[in-house]
Amino acid sequence: LHAVTATAYLAPTNGNRRTTRLAAMHADKQSIEENARRFGLSAAQVNGLLLPVKERNSITISDICATVLMRGGHFWQFLGQSQLEALARCWTCHIVPENTLICNATDECAFFWIVLAGHAVVEEPKLSLDDESVQRKSYRVISADAGTAFGHFPLVHRLTLYGYSAATLHDAGCILLQVPKRDFNAILLRETERMLRDTTALLKTSSFFHDWGENSLHRLFFWLKRRRCKVGERVMRQGDAAVNLTVFFGVGQTFGRMTSLAFALYARARLEHADE
Image 1 (cartoon, rainbow, N blue to C red):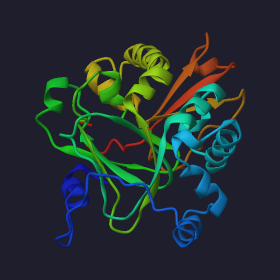
Image 2: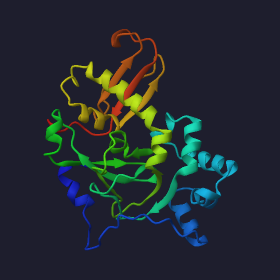
Image 3: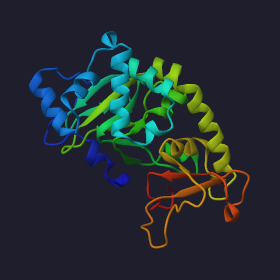
């Protein structure tokens, strides 16, 4: 999805106005079973996800954690068990139908989001070497698939407004986990800031990223996929489709002689435009 198509994807279609308010799904038996089949879950798992926060206990929290880990995805891979359990105690689950606006760029920043199943699209400023030009240029649209989180940037930077829009498309809904701002700050903020600071410093040592503005590097960071590679593991092959930007970080080794753990960061967006 390219930036030039962003407006077409996130604008209301067929005269139907998207709503910015997410309402919890009515937990009747038929809707539970329908959505369970739709997203590849059991009715019991959907019931557990929709359980009100005040009714959760250690047993239901354990079941909820097992459900989200079973679905897999990048966000869960680097999350500690204590962090996962803390999040499972405070998030609310929403079954988001097709063609629904999750948040607007001009809404007050109040939540962090995790896609558990299905997918949403996020529209945010394009990456640019010049931080100031980010505010003047068009937006880009990024797909947020199962196991993808979004909304870090305004929370980490203590912004009042989201600064991005998110929605489901006309042909796909999603199961969305909504984490209140105060809980994100208590559970994830400190670790996220540390990772952001360390990764940005590493990227700046590369000639490719040296001239990038700090805000653009921060935006890029939140769409990177981290991967731990074992010694001798093949990361890519000659002839593979060039759809990712891959950055290698070795531990005390040069790339040509890397024999210890490496970290490969996969950018979600293709670098098809000179200013991206």
